[in-house]
Structure formats: structure tokens, C-alpha cells
Image (cartoon, rainbow, N blue to C red):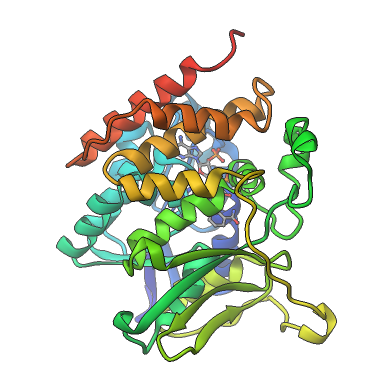
Length: 387
Ligand code: NDP
């Protein structure tokens, strides 16, 4: 290990964020030593990455895939492990930086394990923070960890807050592309297919976040994420639709100045800012050609066609378990939509039904959050049509 080399683990290495992170590391191989790489069941792709980056350990969360991983890593000297506990143990190998890029609440326990080691946590896994915001931010403070937002909007806000006082913030505005169905009528939305929903106009992402983007639950989750990361008060958090996805978010100060961060729609930009923080690094992304882009437009979100942001704001306001309930119900409904079991507009309807059936309670530990998550999933599954 050279003197400047830092250690890194990537939870969710085979996904969209994981691949973008590894692309940047590939271009800066001397700067990093890879410790743990993880996936769910994609053992062959994980083993290939583990070999390429000479990882210490590769972990599949789905234990049934461990034999395949072992076979793919045979003779490499790289440890192979499988199962939920192995994932948490790998995340707990103290490293300088962990990129938390598992999709869904499944990433919560390993992300918490990484936080408990201190160090830098590049957080992409918004569902974990949404589900356990208070507990996670308290753990960050307790263990001296630093949470760096990977999500492009929160990364933009983080950058716009540098050198300023939170007490001077008048409002924070999250931008939303509006997704592929931005202009669709309610009737068209009712007939939207999974293939149409995963085709995002500006970003290339995993299937779940692409559907979240189409329903606007992604923005709802991000509103809650911002509420925990930048505690300026829910009433100061706004959402504006910006179809070009060039302005990634904005912070308005009390003197009337608004600072915005602009960049191409490429997640390697916010990931690079996290990897290099507090420095900057080169990326393969070209310069922003505003003259070629021509127009940047903005409009208010339509919460009648897309109720997700209203539901998220209500869940955040209710606090306690409600954000975890909203997230769990959404994960179940998105999965059912992707499998063709329910229609597109049923996603928000089901989330609203599950939220309405919950009495507010305040989970005080990771186990209690996971229990709420499991219970809300059962409730959401109960709403599904019979197979
Ligand atoms: P992908 O679906 O592309 O990748 C998800 C990763 O998590 C894969 O490595 C997958 O492994 C792993 N995984 C899936 N399920 C489990 C599980 N149950 N246990 C352990 N690991 C699991 O997702 P994205 O990269 O798109 O998104 C990752 C996170 O980053 C999400 O929270 C998303 O909201 C957030 N994010 C993503 C952005 C993007 O541009 N993609 C932008 C901003 C935030 P396997 O390959 O084996 O299935």
C-alpha cells in the first residue's frame, strides 16, 4: 500500500452506483485499496470485479449463491462469504471509505455496521436513511463517522452549503426531472408498463430507482433524506420539476442569494466529489455546454397525478416509524409492479393505504426499525392480488 493509498469497501458493487464508483477507481488504481465488494446474487459479476480490483473479500447477501461465488473465485486467494450476517461483518471491516450502494432497506444493517467503524460513508442507499434517519444520524455522531451524500441532489446541496451557516438558509430546493411520465395524463399513467417506467429520459439507473423516479417516490424519499441530512425544517424543503436535470439542487440564503450546483446527468460527478472530498478529482465527464443545452426550465410538481411527494412529506411530518413504513410499502409495490402484478398507479395507492393503517410509533433501535419494515412489508403484500 503506497502512503497516500486509502482503503474502500463498496456495498452493492454490481449495481449502477457500484459500477460508476468502480469506474472512477479503475482510473485511479493507485489511490485505492479495495477491501470488500458485495452483491445480492450476482456472483459471477461480483467475482469478476473482486479479481479485477484484488479485493480482500467478496460477499453475496443471498447465501444460496455462495457456492457459485466460491467457484468463481477459486485460486484467487480472495475470501468468499454469503448471507446477511457475512454482509454486515464485511461492512464492519474498518476502511477509510464505504460506498453504501445497496438498493432498499436491505442496505440498512450493513450501512449501520460501516458507520459504527467511523470513517467516511458515501451514502447512495437513500432507503436506509429514510427508514432509520434519527438512529443513523445519531450513530454517525456517536462513532465519529462522516456521511457524504452520493445522491446527486443531496451532493449538490452539500456543495452549496460549504462555507455557509445552516442558520442562514432560507430554503433548500430539490430538483426533479419529473421522470419518463412527466407529461402523461392520469389515463396514460394507469396503463404504464414496467418497460416504459425504467426508461429514464436523463439518467441510467437501477430498475427500482427508475420506477421511483417515474412515480416521483424517488423525490419523496429524497425529501425525507434531505430532512435528515440537512435539518433546516421540513417547511424549508421544496421540490421543483426541472426536466433537463442540469441544476441538481439549490440552497437559498436569507439575503436572497441562491446557490445552485450544475453538472451533467452522470452519477460519476457526485461520486467523484465524494471519493475526493474535501479535494476534487478528474472525471471522464465532459464540460457542461450550456449554450448547447440552451434552456433550463422549472415548474411546480403536480401532486394530483404524482401523489408520492405529498405522501412523503406527510410521513416525514408524522415522523417516528412513518418514513420506514412508506419506504417498505413502496419497495413491495415497486417489486410487484416490475413483476407485472399491479398497475403503475397502484404503487402510490398501496403506499397510502399502508400508511393510513399505521398508528405513529417511534422505533428506538435498528432492530425496531427492521421490525417496522418487516411488518409494513407484510401489510403491503396483503394488498397484492392473488397470483
Ligand atoms: P442497482 O439495482 O443497480 O444495484 C443494487 C445493488 O445492490 C447491486 O449490487 C445488488 O446486487 C445489490 N442488492 C440488491 N438487493 C440486495 C439485497 N437484498 N441485499 C444486498 N445487496 C443487494 O441499484 P442502483 O445502483 O441504481 O441504486 C443503489 C442505491 O443508490 C439505491 O438506494 C438508489 O436509490 C441509490 N441511488 C442510485 C442512483 C443511480 O443513478 N443509480 C442515483 C442516486 C441514488 P445484485 O447485482 O447481485 O442484484
